[in-house]
Image (cartoon, rainbow, N blue to C red; front, side, top):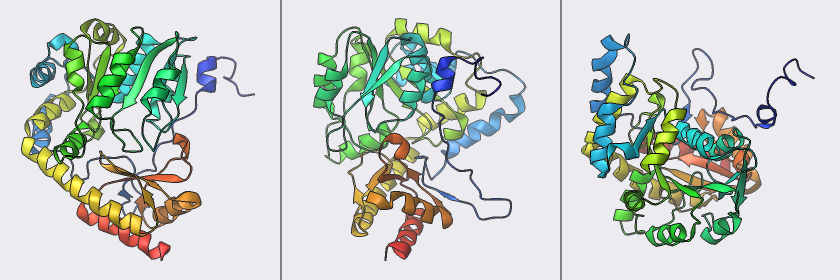
Length: 368
C-alpha cells in the first residue's frame, strides 16, 4: 500500500486518470509529429487574435480582469443576452467541472450517452456522483434512452452536440422535443464546442441547426457551452464560456478559481470573435476536406461515420490499435477510442489539405 493511499479521499482513489495525447515531438532533434488527435484548428488562430496577444505582452505583470468584463460584455451583445447570463472560464472543460461541483454530490448522478466526451465522466466522478451512460443509436444520441436513464437523483444531462467523438448531431426538432420532456429538477448542458462547424454543415442543407440560445432566453434550465479552443484556434490559451440562467451561473461563479482566465486569452478571444472572414475560410475548408477524407478513408476499408464537426469517427474493426501504432511510427497521431468505450474505432481530426494528404498516403502505404 502506498504512503498516501489512506490519506486521499475515496473519490481521488477511484478516479480514472485522463490519458493525454503524446507530446508534440519525439525527442530533441526528431521530426515534428503531425497532430490529428485533439480536434485543434490546423490553421492556427486568427491574425487579429495574434496581434491582440502581442499587444498585451508588456502588461503581463498585472493580474487579469477576474470578471472578464470586456469580453463578457461583447459575448452578451453577440448572443443577445444580459451579461449576468454569461460566465467565462479557463476553457469549457473548466465550466463542466464547475457545473458538476455546483450541482452534484455523492448520491446524485448525471446522465449522458455512451461514447461521448470523456471529461463528463471525470467531472462527475470528481464530486463523488455517478455518471449514467445511456446506449447510443446509430453512432448518435438516443433521446428516448437518455430520458429513460433520468431518475429522481439526476441533476445534469450532458449533450455534446455535435458529439465528440462520433461527430453525430441532434437537429432542432430532436433538441426541442427532448428539452420539453426533461423534468424540472434536471439541468440540460448543451455542449456546443463544435457549433461553428455544425452551422456551416447546416447551411449546406444537411440538417436544421438547434436554436439552443432560445431556451436560455426563455429561462429554461439549459446551459449552453461554447469554446475558443476549436474554430478560433486558441486551445493553448484555455478559454471558454457558458450561457444560461443568471442565478445558476452566479452560483457557478463562486466556484471558479480567482484570476483563472489570463489577459491574453481574453484579448485574443475578443479579437477572434470579430474575424468573421477567418471563421468562414476555416469552416469551408473543413467541410470540403471532411467530404474528401471520408470518401478516401471509406475506399481504404474504414467505416467512417457522417460528421458535423472537424473530425471523423472511423471504425477499423480489430485493426484500430494497429493502425494507431503504425501511424505514430510514421509521425502521425490519431486518437484511439478504447477509453471512450469504442475499442474498434479511432478519431481523426481534419487537418489542412496538405496534412490530410500526408495521412491518406500513410494509410495507403500499410493498408495496401
